[in-house]
Image (cartoon, rainbow, N blue to C red; front, side, top):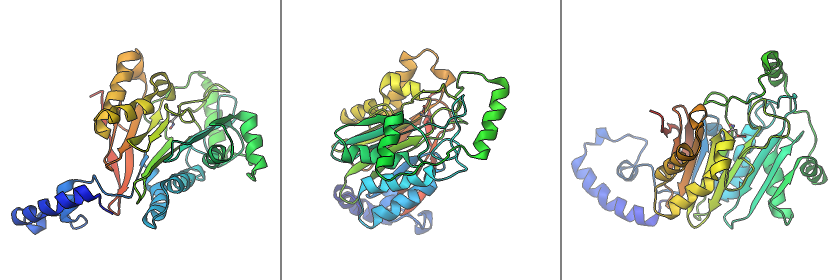
Length: 330
Ligand code: SD4
């Protein structure tokens, strides 16, 4: 399960470490190897955005630890969040647009560079699974709105009302002031983006959201746009985005993160460079949050965001934990 190069060097390091470090200084849940090597380098792993990622990771991990495919892990993992009615920004229970209509965006990529996505999809609880079918059953990458719904229904998905009482109430409260500009800050965006590396070392990613709360009807964000909200290159790594999608769209953020990794940056450095690109190009960036999350082929992970507050869940070495991302605006 541990990357061979790291394992071999880890054995050597561990031997010397065991001579130098008193046993009681070593966290019982970590082996000497991971103590010395940090959390990087072992597969499988799954990483996902925000606190809800902890629950989603559990399901993904079950698949990965039984030698399942990264693609199945990310699809099944994010379905947990899509099905959670209490989550106000993914799947059923997501906050509606300004007209009170819930519209969903999702995308998925596999280890062969295949991609599928849906956007502006209504009345289907699991857009990620529709996106996967677009990838696997059609010659296309993206289906939108009515066409995406028609495709979903033809493939056995059922229509259901996605506007829960809780979301409806929030919309009714919002309508009192009806500010027709989505104000996005680090408190109200919770897309789930997930990346996994399976036992074979293959990487896949998924991203699913109801988008910006009270957005204009018809607005589509970064999450279903391959390269903006999600990108995977199995030779290099993968990245997902959360936050004000327009910033990731204008800079093709996730593609950029992967390209920075291709040029030798670590996942965290690559995410930081992509955030710095936003800061360099978009004047009003300080009004918004963007968080990038990435993994590379060596199973190293990292994240970076504009403002304090973005966190992510990493399940690796049999430990599922929440990590605060570093940020630009200190
Ligand atoms: C969007 N990036 O539609 C998404 C919003 C988001 O958690 O991240 N929500 O812009």
